[in-house]
Structure formats: C-alpha cells, structure tokens
Length: 301
Image (cartoon, rainbow, N blue to C red; front, side, top):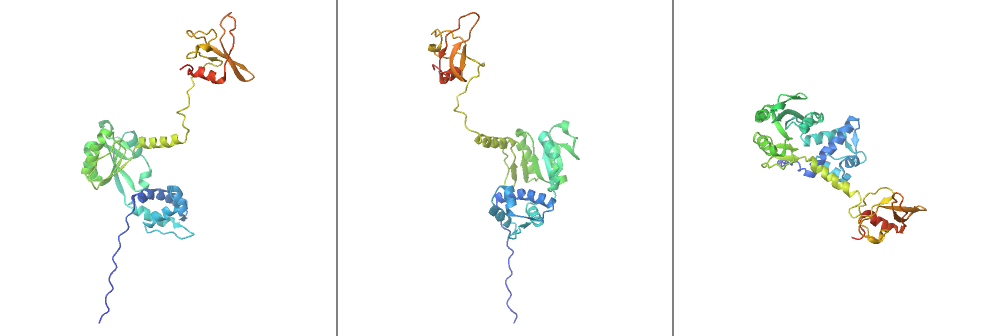
C-alpha cells in the first residue's frame, strides 16, 4: 500500500505593496545606483532612511514587501536590492514613451539623458504646431498630432507624457487612452478625467513652488503687525498729519518742514528748517515717540 500523498503547497501570492512604499522605492533606487557606481557592496537601513526622510524601521518594512531582509550588523547587498527594486518597479523592461506638446518644457524633457538609463525611451514626439513638425530633438522627429494613434501602435507606446496647455490636455488624454495608453504623466495645469484602469501622475510646478513658499513663510517672523514708517530725508521730518500744538506758530493750516535736533547722540527736539534770512525758530521739545509719530503721520488721527 503506497504512502499517502502530502498535499502540495500552494504558491502564496506576493503581498501587495502600499502606495506609500511604492513612492519611496525610487528614492532607494537612486541611492543604490550611486552606491553601485562607487563600488559599494552593502548599505545600511540608516543610509536609505536618510535619503527617503523616514526611519530605519520604515525602510526595513518597505523592503520586506520585496522579500529583502538585511543581515544584522552588515546591511543589505546593494546589487541584490537594486535588482529586486528594479523588478518590482517594472524597470527591467524597455518602455516606450510618447511626449505630446514639444514646447519649452516638452523639449527639455525630451532631451533629458536620464530616462534611458532607467528603462524609458522617448520614442515619439507629437505637437499640434505645424511649424514644429519635422524638427529633430536628439534623434527623435517631431510628428503632427494627427499621427498620434498610428505612432502609439507603431512604437508600442505604454506611457504618455502630456506637456500641452491646459485647454488641450483632456482631449490629448482621451486620445491616448483610446489608443491603448494606460499610464499618463501630466504636466498640464489641469486635473484629467480618466476611466478605471488608467493611472495618472500629475506634476504641477506652480503648486510645488507655492508649497515651498508656505514653508519659506513659516521660517520668517510675522511682520504684518509692525508699523510702516514712511522714509524721510535725513535730518528732516514732514509735518503733514501732525497736531497744531507741535507747530512753532501754533497754526493748524500750513505746516512748515521740520528738522530734528540732535545732542549727545540723542534726538532732543524738532524745529522748522530755516529759509533765507529768517530768524531761527524756537526748538520745540519732543520725545522720540512723538518724533516717530510725526514721521509716520499717525499723530492726531
């Protein structure tokens, strides 16, 4: 009698990788690529954590989704980790990219040399401006937008990059999706509407600058409550807005121009500026606070 068969072990599916982890994998990959280029063989979770702005414990958790577990006291093998992250990100395949809208931004992206090294090839450039058709960016020719669908089929495009003005972005997106593109990188300042199964990543440079402006403002003290002092010529202060009592003749109509009187390094008073052969006017004693009120025109309000 033959022994009973052992039940076969079912192959467990790979655990789903959280979106937050996916967003950090390219950061780890960039660090690992630099280390590999420098001949470094191992890397610690502390080094990767510093690059991604997270804790070492978070790094170890992220890499556990890839089945990578470092050796205590040694760290992770750089080459192994490079291969696993690249495979999970799908960078082991050569992906054709179409860029639509070859203006200043599109032109700069098309000439960026870092894409091929990371598994992306700009295989097609499309623009609605007839004057740009036929021009070369690198070794890729700009084609009319009417050829968009044919180019996607000919070059097996899997990713579309939209660099058009906002008004044209949704129409371009619809055409890309209808032609079979399911991943889109959008630089146009508009939110795109896409069906289920299509992934869109939006890059809005203005929004990013506004976020940086917010953080920059937090670094500076709030000066909104400080009084605004109007500039005046050295040694003189305009009497506009001052009370009549501070006028040498007590009049409240025409106001003469004043000068400050200094003694022993301190402001001792104010007096009208002398004109011609007129007798010097008496000095009106006034404190520093009153002088400032004269300068700002806040006296008597």
